[in-house]
Image (cartoon, rainbow over all chains, first blue to last red; front, side):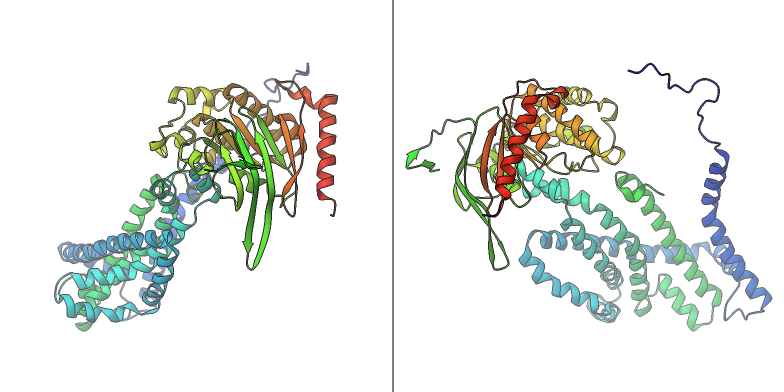
Length: 276
Length: 272
């Protein structure tokens, strides 16, 4: 040890810098999303009022909101139908994708055999299959669920495959050095490693499953927000048309927010969660 | 298993590692690359042996052959009287890879206990949870047992990796350039930490490195390898008494061995 005193607890202490500017910046960052959203709707409202746009072309956001608030049961009922279809489609796609990706990640043969089929589903405009589903399942929820699943399937299977494959070689070798079984490597290494990929797929797939459910409802349905929008369009019920759009957007946002909350907990270890 | 040296059976009871005329080729496209050529070597139980050589000399390959992660094309390897694959099944190895290779979703404590939880059939659970905590405390990570790997510096992560290996309590330790990703100061500290832990555990160590000082400070013997094809140039005894501390690096004995290793490396890289 040296005799030189290097402590700083006397006069001229080495103190941390002032905190206030930092706190202000943080507050601004918290407000920013609401500010952005508010400006968007304010600009819309102003434009429609000032430019005197016909309601048929573009109604006031305030009147759309009023319509929703005045008919809560209507939107709740139809929203629930769409949510259920999208929900089951989402999970159907998820489990099918993880199952297929697991088989592909473990066998080169399976991967090469399956890839063309996946590319086929990827490059086919899957919406064209909805009439086929209707032919098979008629007026049941299944055509809608299958359409939702088909839309969500591609990001899920692509990301699940990348996630399950992209394991760290050093870690894999470490596990092999104690003769860990394939099963152990799968559950302890591949699955956790693929979670960030699955979560980012899920963010996209929430929207896609909703799109799938709505398209399914366009084709054949007497309920759901796709149906309410279609009916509103044919009868020129502008508020109901836009109300359906707003409620769908709201549903999408709520589910993405729930997902982000779950992701923050589950992926606490992952670097993607550091800068939020 | 049939171990042979000039037709005579090898004593299967040896507790160490025996390489008998081991050769290995890798196939790159149409070419067969000769990674190792007729390597024969005996490593005694409890011995600390370093493998050193230029890149492409097959030192990492030799380590993986020892661990049963690769199979030799010619020759035999016996580990405590078993084939490497069997020794792996029995969890005879603790492996320290080049990168810390911690599971990022597990805390320090959970990473350290992981190897014991795998391949339970071997019945090797490693040291107790309390002993693991003591070990972490001993190597200066007592305050970080519940931290996630991303919260640690590179040097601390590598300490966890070392703790994880010693927590398994395996009789053989395989290390593949474990300190090469660290800065020079941390790296020098790590040598003596490793010596300290090894002194307590008493396991056999095969240590791959391309640092001459590291090899000399740590080892009982330094195996100098040459490239194309990978082969043993010379096996150099390190006659420096243990326990060794930082001042070893100022001693004449140390400098003499360093010079011999350097000369052997030069000889190995000379065009033939």
